[in-house]
Length: 569
Figure 1 (cartoon, rainbow, N blue to C red):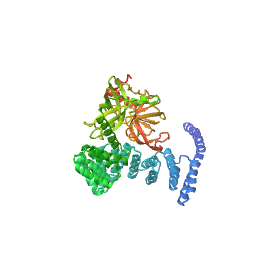
Figure 2 (cartoon, helix red, strand yellow; figure 1 turned 135 degrees about the vertical axis):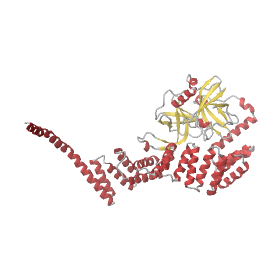
Figure 3 (cartoon, rainbow, N blue to C red; figure 1 turned 120 degrees about the horizontal axis):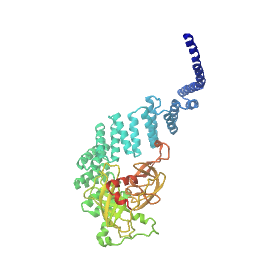
Figure 4 (tube, rainbow, N blue to C red; figure 1 turned 45 degrees about the vertical axis):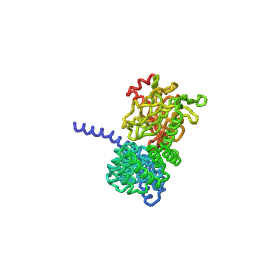
């Protein structure tokens, strides 16, 4: 009886399973058929491609996608055929689709070479974002030195220094015998002013590829930036053995000699440099320094004028000419310092009140001469606090020079033969050299009574909003107004579409209510356009700037205890 029950139970329990299998077969059959058809077209495409019929092969691979849209193999094969036809942008899009379906598509490691080659083509066309995309995809398939090295170079070309350095470090890890990777790593470190790291990288490059004058020259520059003038001199002399016709090396050697007080040798070397590179304006500028520091002012000014004639954008030579002219005016007529300022009316200059709150910062010293921009944070009767960038008031090592003097100059429109009013300033707060937040607060006594602090925006600014900035670009008029938009706003920076150059560092970025939303910290950069959906496909352009968001500024002021002073404005 039990056996019968058991048999009956088995007989009846098998029917649902049979029904399920039948239904599953009916449902799955079309998919299986589609898969087999797709596979057949894939094989057909391979045969056509082997026969050299690329267009027919493309058609077959695309037919695969009509049956199986997630066929990674079809996407990759389409990409490779398009690449062989020099349809590079279409090829990259096809690779993209394959990587979307599978972030690590089943490609042979050797096929990463296709992507490296594609990246190289984009790099030659200076389509850096596309090149980066291709190299990164190649690294997913198989990490190779070439893919990593080329990625680092592409990032360097986009002025993404930190990312470039990390990519080049990875390249060195993959193949430590490649001196060219150390060379580019040194360049990436130098752009970030990481001079000891750059020196080490160049030294490694020379151990692997000796007799390279350019590498010796770069190493000498990094030593000079660290104030190691004697070592720099030795390296520059070594560089001249391999590059005896390089005027830049003679110029740098002359500067190293001058910094050690070897003025006679320096003058002779600068003259050699001028014979080799008569159109190198910096050689004339250095001769200008030598003569002025030696008390031969008129001779020095003559060299500075020649430097500016060759390169009108040479900021330091222009600065020297302007400062000496100002000094001579005051020497000839000391009463100029007591004369009232000539301030335009709002009718003649609608932005006059804003410009009065924004100052030109002038730095004079042994290791730092130049200009920048700052703006009024707060005033308390006879004391004012000015915000600017750290790098505006420090030397190339981001250090404060003990002998340097800092002045702030106020906006006015003096006629020919007159001067603008200035006040001495001292550094009250400054961020450390290794801090990404590039800020300094200056203290000024007895500023003009009409100066008013700028208001800080209460909220972060959104992308695509219009902004202006007022600053002192070295190659334009002082208190130049720049207009643009905010490209992007992240925790550490505002990407600006406006054209900014040296001298505008420290300038306030203002919204449509003239509230400060950021502080310009970097100029003349390649900056991405974030309107495109994929970061790696962003367009780039030269000349935009980066600014520190006002929220980050406010936080640091609060840490310094300065915010309690300015929060009541």
